Length: 393
Ligand SMILES: *Cc1c(COP(=O)(O)O)cnc(C)c1O
Image 1 (cartoon, rainbow, N blue to C red):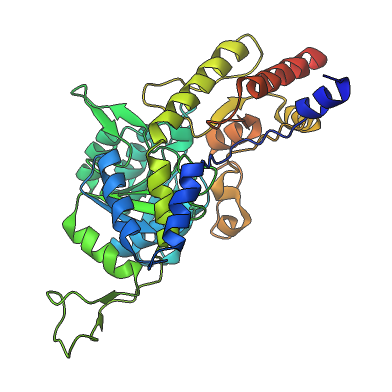
Image 2: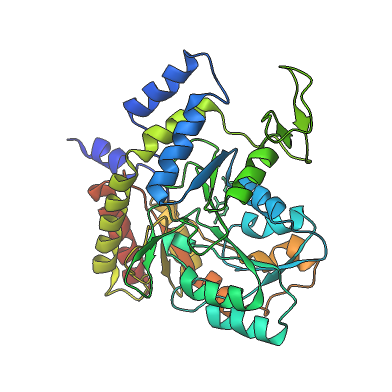
């Protein structure tokens, strides 16, 4: 091989995350394009049924994206402008925005310095100080690491809060409960509702797409209504019936439906979800082993971690990020703390309010993590990180 070719291969861009589309995926979508239904066809129910089985919950509702899923959840739980809802500052803005869509107030609560998840002790402090102030909480299984919802539910039951689990990072993730049982992220054994996203960087990709999971028939029925304009054609739910054309709009809903093409892609992707998880764990184990002697902090390695992200902490994060870019390795920062985004600063949130989240943000960097990351490409990432630390010594 000439050096020119090997150089161009070695400089192939490596993103922090990417989708994995196979020929079967493409065929599944093409089959829908040849069928009678492009939206609201049989693939939606198929995807919902299989996803609910995968997660281990009773009901699943496919929606347009993860943000729409969050919005439908806050609507279904009746969030309004008199209510306060708690969430973590280290998440994607949508986890907080869904409260604002309904006019509610977002209260951020700082993270745990080891897991980077919302700190349950700090939540307890908040609730103790103001027992009747909060309506709900939106914990996030950040990076793919499960929040211990059994512990959280003890608190929320005591103070009367609902739980929406943002499990966008964690399909296939789980924690072990006090009886030694696996509790899958999103199974809604402890949360009222849970949500997922099928954005291309997530575990399961449908382009745009999302899912809500629950064990509550009442919330399920409400979500179905709200997903499609608040309209029902179900004779059992209607006040009257003028004929075959008749429907009733009973609530102010939205068009947050997923298309059949996307659902077919979802079904096909879901069949390979476990494979992807195994590969993600392999990649994480190799980073753990290869980076442990460098001056960085590797992430907490817990059982049940779904490794959507592999986040390291570095005292030289900006320089490391820039250095890796010169090597065509495109890392990312997850996340800028939501409370210091300009939109949330207007409500009085400022730098200094969440010291642990802000300290985390100063150092965090997400290394490339996706099932099709090859061993050679991961070696390139590891070598580049090592090279950086040699040059700064
Ligand atoms: C991706 C993501 C969302 C939003 O999902 P979209 O499908 O992009 O709307 C919400 N919360 C978290 C934690 C996410 O990672």
